[in-house]
Length: 241
Length: 241
DNA sequence: TCCCTGGCAAGTGTCGACACTATGGCGTCG
DNA sequence: CGACGCCATAGTGTCGACACTTGCCAGGGA
Image (cartoon, rainbow over all chains, first blue to last red; front, side, top):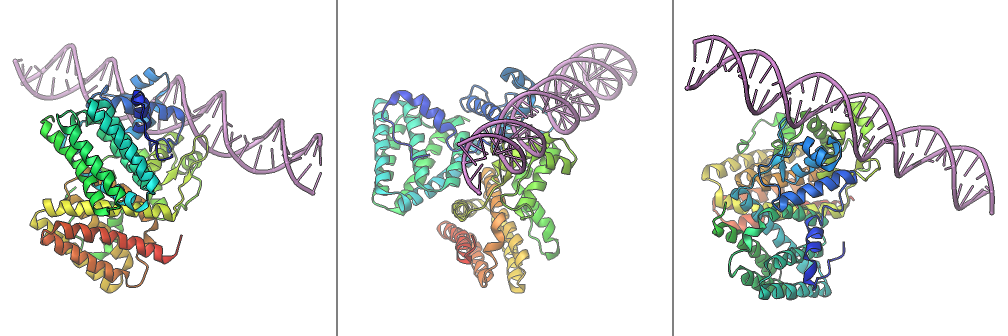
C-alpha cells in the first residue's frame, strides 16, 4: 500500500473508515473470501457497537443470517477471537468480549510505546517528501478541528497515524498497530468527546510533524507517545467505564 | 499465571520450553482442544525448524497424519496464519512462511520497543519482592553462561523475559510479546551462537535488574531496549540470511 | 418452600461428501 | 523443436449430518 495520500475531500469519511479499519489485515485475509467477509462484517459490527459487549454470537444464528453453513462462520469467529473481539469458550456459546477500563489502559500503553517507535523510525527513514505529505494531513486535521467535525477528525487522525506507520518501513509494526487499532476503535467515541480535546490534539500533531521535519528523534518519540497517552487520560477523565 | 518462580534445576529445560512457547496463548485457546492441539503441534514443529520455511502443509495430509477430518486442521492453519507462521493463499496450498532478514529486523525493533515498555512498567509496578525474584533468574543465567550451556541460557532467558512481562501487570502486552516470541524463536539459534555473546548478555541482565532495584525508569528502559537490539545486531553480524 | 434430579432443547465439535479450481503433464500445432 | 492449450488429479472451500455437551425447566422429594 502506498503511503496513503492525504484526503482533502471531507465527504468520503465513510470510505476512509472502511479502508482504515482493516488496512493491514487486508493483505493477509488468507482463507476464502466467505470466511473473511463474515469476519469483516462481524468485526465492523462489534467495533461500531451494533453488537454490544457480552452479546451472544452463536454459529447457527450467524450461519442462517449469512446464508451459509456453520463452517465459515466458525472460522470467522476464530479470527475474531485472535483479534480480541470475541471470546469463544470451549463447548460454550461465543460472545462479544467485554471492554474493561483496565484493558483500555493496557492497549493504550502498548500503542503509546509502538507509536513512539513509529516516530523514531519515521525520523530515520522517511524522505522529506513523505514528511511533507504528513503536513497535508495536518492541514486537514486543523480544518476538522476548526469546524468542530469530531467524526471527520477522528478518521483523519487514524489516517494520519496509518500514514505514519507506513512511513516507518516496518510491515510487522503496521500490522500489529492495525490489530490494536481494531480493538481501540471500540471505545473511540470516549476519547474525543471532551471539550478542548480537539485543539489540544491538533497542537500535538503540529509539534509532531515539526519534530519530523527537524529530524529530532527524541522529541518526535516523546510527542508521539504523549499524544496517545493524552487520549487515554481523556478517557479516564470521562469517568465512563 | 503467577510470576513464574525461577528454576534452579537445569535438567527440565524441556518442560520450561514447552511452557514458555505458548505461555500467553494458553489462556485463550478458545475453540476445541483438537484444533488447539494441532495448532500447538504444528507451531512447535515450525518454530523448531522441523517444518522448514516454504514447506507445504496441506490440510488433507495433516488430517491423515492427525487422524482427524480436515475441519480442525483448517482451523489450526488459520490460527497459525494469524501468528505469522504459515501463509494460506486463497485456493492454494498453505505453506510454512519464509523468514527474511528484513522481517527479523522488523520483529526485533518491535520487541525492543515493547520490552522497554515492560521495563518501565516493572519499575513502576513491581514490588521489591518480585524484583528480587528476578535476581534469582539472573543467578541461573550467570550459571548457564559460566558453564557455557547455550540452550539452557536461551530458555532461562526467555523465562526471565516472561517473568518480567508478567510483572508489568499488562496482560495484553504479555500476550503480544508471546506472539512475537513465537515468531522470533524461529531464528533464535542465530542470536546466541556467537562467541562472547553470552557474557555480554549476562552483564546487560545484571544492569537491568540493578536498574529495577534502583527504580530507575529511564535506565531500565534503555538497557532493556539495547538488550534486544544487541541480539539483532548479533544476528546481522552472523551473516546468515 | 427449597433443593435435587432427570429429561429436553439448543448449540458445539467433528465428520465425510461434493463441487470447483489450480497445477503439471501430455499431446497438438505452429 | 518450442509454445500453446487441454485434461486428469490433487486439494480447497463449503455443506449438511450426527453425536455429545451444556444449561434450563419441570416435577418430585424433603
